[in-house]
Structure formats: structure tokens, C-alpha cells
Amino acid sequence: MEKSFEDALKELEAIVKELESGNVELDSAIEKYTEAMKLVKHCNDKLNTATEKVNKILTENKELVDFEVSE
Image (cartoon, rainbow, N blue to C red):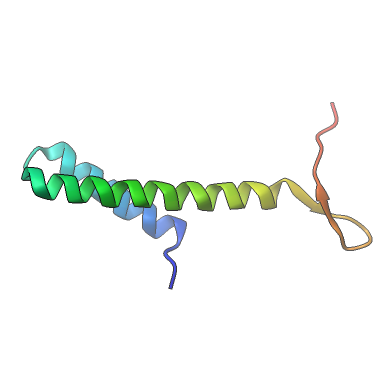
């Protein structure tokens, strides 16, 4: 099962807090940094997908089209 954005963000925040504490051995810090970067990518991918969905609207004929803001 894929992690939700919120769960991934919570894990990322916990890793950052732990790394910022300075109480992590080097090997463990490298592993945690690697995991954090995977979580960042996962969150970024989720945000990009959400942005794409938000930038689409449902037209009368049930087709998704790009949303354009008129000024």
C-alpha cells in the first residue's frame, strides 16, 4: 500500500527533527538522509499529481480540460 502524502510528510518531519538533534551516528544519519530524500520525492510526486488534477476542470460534456484563469 502506498503512503499518503500526510504519512510521508510526518515521517519526513520526524527524520529531520532527529537529524537536527545531532544525536545520530554518521552511518545512521546517512541512512536517514537517504530515506528522507525518498520521502521528499514521494511528497513532491504527490503534490505534482494533485496540482495537475486541480488545474483541470470538468466541462459540460464530461471531458477534462486545462483550467485557465481569466484576468
